[in-house]
Image (cartoon, rainbow, N blue to C red; front, side, top):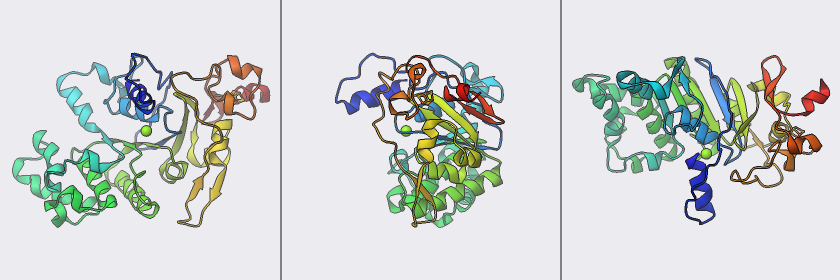
Length: 316
Ligand code: SF4
Ligand code: MG
């Protein structure tokens, strides 16, 4: 909650007001072991907050995050530490999350050393192996973060997360800062690592093209609510929710063969004061009276597909 309140206040140049913003409101979502779940939505929709909650960096004011069936907030001692290591977050800007005064081998080797993941004498060779696995020459371990390109720094950030042997990665805009061609390389690295280490990903991005590239299933968020969820290919081919339909009306580009998607017309309403009823109604071409008063519930509209739109009742 705070995350988004702070950002909104900062954007407005205001002091942080003691206000509760439901950045994430009634979102219920399961991620299957071994899958890549893409979480897409515009900036301010609450997807980062949701990612931070899953990674244990933000505590939900209500509700629970369960990991392997256990409420993460209720874990104590070694179990809490274990869950914290098993779920790792990979941030957008590796430059701001990598200590500029540390050599990359120390950045990557720090957590395994501190947590005793390998014995001290084995840390150097362990780090070399991980650098190799993320596509970096092990000899670059002696360099500092500023001596790497953006794409290489992204790999360092991934190496640091992998070094604690996680099984779940929350990737928040992890390729957003990179050039399109480098984005594809880093996404392919994520795909490779998922297979090698049997990882599960929650992949948060505002960019549907990125999410489409990597995800098995896609969840779409709008102003703190989940509006649609389904198998990635099917969701993009046959979006049910008007918001998803707007997101997928694509403009193909020739750059990389990757599709890019246009932005939706009309600004995103303030999360501090979201529209009543269906949050999307001011921007929805199909909005009707009911939409302005009644919140549509997320329900199954086809096998494996959930959507939250009153139009589905009409169709039924
Ligand atoms: Fe549009 Fe109404 Fe559906 Fe919301 S519930 S997406 S406003 S048609
Ligand atoms: Mg974000």
